[in-house]
Image (tube, rainbow, N blue to C red; front, side):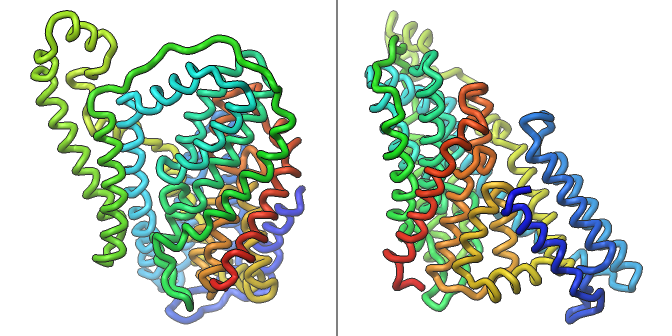
Length: 482
């Protein structure tokens, strides 16, 4: 068992033995040393082992955590009802559901826009352009890394990694060494790029939507941009070292050009406008960002209606061979293909439901009393800086979503700099292992047999250098925020 796992089990299992099951304020029972608490931990641990084994079992990760969430809360509700507390568990689970609903709807709108751009060939056009340019392996290593770093703050790290990996596979051919190094670089760059933007990773989105108050003010949308340089360092350090291992060769073959479909550029503009709307709702109207995102979904719905109604008119405006060529190339899109609800249906529902299970499971463990004990050990006894570094290491094993949700549930009293530090470490810590982030897991499937767990593990010390360098950079550059 790794040191990080030992730490995790120590925090969640060993310490609760010191607590007693007793009634506390607000009719909340401390079950940390009761069989209900131990059973809840065992259920969550078993569910997460199944999540980590998804690559081998092919059991979708949402299934075990959804079941675990139901079992944990049913145990809590049964025990509370047996002791005369009939509404406490219900109130707590409704609070968790509200937090989940805000994040789920926010992500659903973002995924819908990404799927709409994908259907309009935005990403495929970029991929074909890069392939056709005839760049060398080392040039492509840096180009895909730069694009991954700067696209992920808008399009999220998973989508960005998949797009860049498609480019690497298209030009890499049988050069497995280049494909491995390029995929590692993409994972690190995408995770690092997502760490300085609320739209780049779920962890940053969670912190932004929570509206955490600090002595320096609320952690607002613009606060995360202070992480730009530390995030850049997190990617550049390992990339600069790996550069010398990339084959200095020229790939063979080209690629067929792919044109974007009608309305693609306007959808990109609408997505940017939706982001502005969400930020404005939160900053100026003091409304949850999800309200602005759902308003932005209406932009896409109306534009989809416009595309459908004007399809024949624009097609007929093109005469003869030009119209036939447009239809043949698919640049006009199909008449009924652009349906916003089909883009909603294509959202990554397994991820969204996995997020539900995680929020409810961690919420249940917090309601039992484990998170308050963990917070006491990590953020009081060890100190916030050490605790936040540990959070990043844990996110390489346990995924950053439950780790960050646990921190937000604990809500330790920290400065702006410390909240940005935990956002950074939780976001980039997943790069240490290929299973530590959604981007890494997805690329192991996309480049199966070429980008592997052990191939990534070989370069983990180099990635760890970037992890340490980014932390020191943040502590130095943003010292005034601590």
